[in-house]
Amino acid sequence: MRPIPAQKFRKVLKRLGLEHKGTQASHEKWDMRKPPMLDRPVIIWANEKDIPILHVKTNLHTLGMT
Image 1 (cartoon, rainbow, N blue to C red):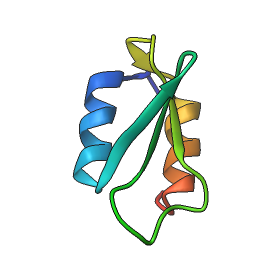
Image 2 (image 1 turned 90 degrees about the vertical axis):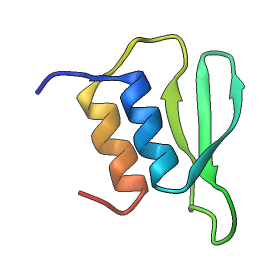
Image 3 (image 1 turned 180 degrees about the vertical axis):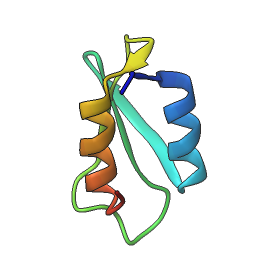
Image 4 (image 1 turned 30 degrees about the vertical axis):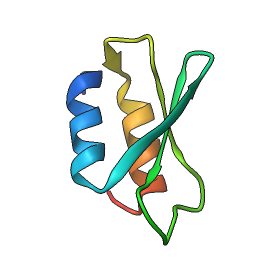
């Protein structure tokens, strides 16, 4: 599988009810807008144009999705 454009993945996160909570170094932290919060936040690279498929799968697992 090919990497997913970061902009598209951010749109998916917004549609799922997550919001950007901040950026530390080169990583964006995304979490739910209101409780219940996730067990751990979704983290994506802020400086990359594409998100590797392994990172997408890991973040979907964090969201409880397949």
